Length: 64
Image 1 (cartoon, rainbow, N blue to C red):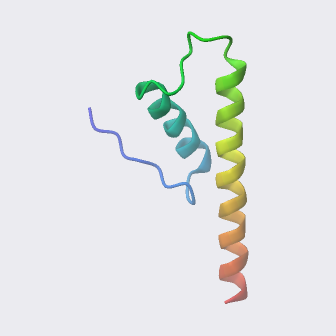
Image 2 (cartoon, rainbow, N blue to C red):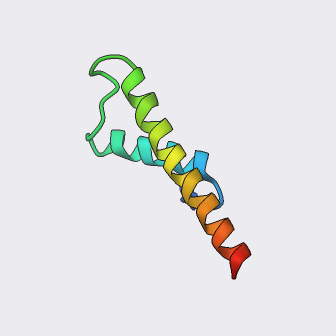
């Protein structure tokens, strides 16, 4: 099964979710350690970062 990788600038939520899933697959994040709050927090941090970056690029484009 091939899944396209979402670009953070066009799909920040999907990109953040894919990043968390890849971290789990790589063994860097484990749903078995503690509760889901840590994974949700990491997702929210990635999402916020990607959304802020999206807004930054949108305002940069409007200035140009």
